[in-house]
Length: 539
Image (tube, rainbow, N blue to C red; front, top):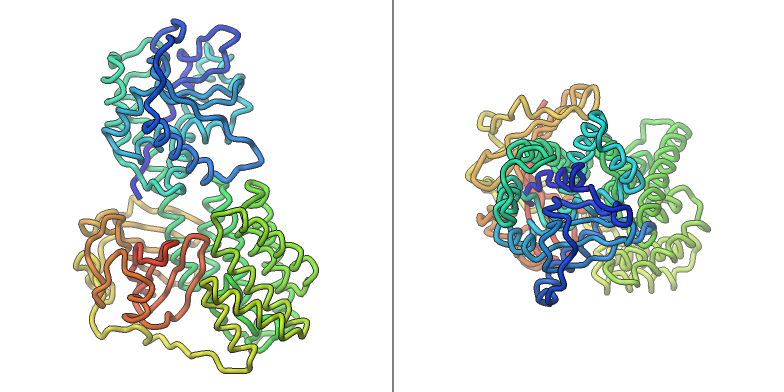
């Protein structure tokens, strides 16, 4: 996942917006001239379809389906490079800009070009005309530059969310576009090229923080450190509200609430589609537990509602909301929302969610005492690939589930990434002090970007508890292997054969996270190993 540095500050810088009244709504990367568009041959269909696919993936990742996305167009003109026209609801790309992007960074660079106008449209499209009208005002120019830098790193995170990674060649892409369009380093009315490149570097640093906080939040969730993980997602939501982040914050709140149920309470007899594990709370007062866990479940529902508000067709948020209602004992709303989740999942792209709904249907039937329907639902979930289907079926039959200990999957050999071993506290990579991200008064994240050729080291420090959590995460192009000889692309059967059952597992809309002793395996939608992380604790 490669850093996409802020590129969009080109898009709305003032002089490019000197258009006639009938075209004043067009906001271009750069306006080379004011001549009328030429009648030129259509763009090659293969290139158009490639750019359209990237654009559609960005729209899907944005998830803001309440606001219809602008139509994507592409032509051979040489006027704007890329542009946004809110009046005609179009985002466009010129062929020359397409070719320059592909030469620099393949589809990641295309995502760089197209994410900025899209995120700008979603975030502040109502204010674009007002900013443009104030173009002659110095304060307005500064405000626009601030907004453009923000659009740069938020657009970068949108491209990352769409699966294009973190693109780290944005200054080079900008220079290549200037060269392709034969622009001088100083275009009248615009900042100099070097200044623009600096803006992109600044946006890239902010983007890096967003990505790191997101990834470490997910890893902390997998380890069951829910309070810390919740703080990570809350930190992100201050800057960027996406359906995924809202949903993840809600999932963590539900998982945290689960730790306030006693193990034998009927609500947690079965495994939920988002459940990791349960911690014993026998020493606490039950009434206090109920009040606290119900508050957390209500908070979770608020996050799921936010995700649904951004994307009404986002099936995972409906499923997770239904789980929260079930744990609250509100089975009527749970059934209704679960049925909606199944309907949304059936619209495509959420097969794992559909299996999760069957798991929840089984739980709801079991709570009503309908063993026959519960059995059918758990079997259906199992057939659709959910491990919770078979697990809950054993519980329903009164069988004891398999007990998994922390020794599960341990190879007897050290797990390393880039020859680094986190089990030796004296050999930990040094975090960069300047990299500190303060997520709360007593929670900080540090990193070392390059402890090895293709890995990253993260260090989460909770000074309130005195606990530190370390992660060493493989990069997207890591070619090494685990201690049990698994490489990226290993199948689920390979993983089961090598590591057996995980200590805990988290289903995600795009795959699964499995935790073993010292190592976390991250599986993709295809069930194959995508990345992995080593982890350790201190304090």
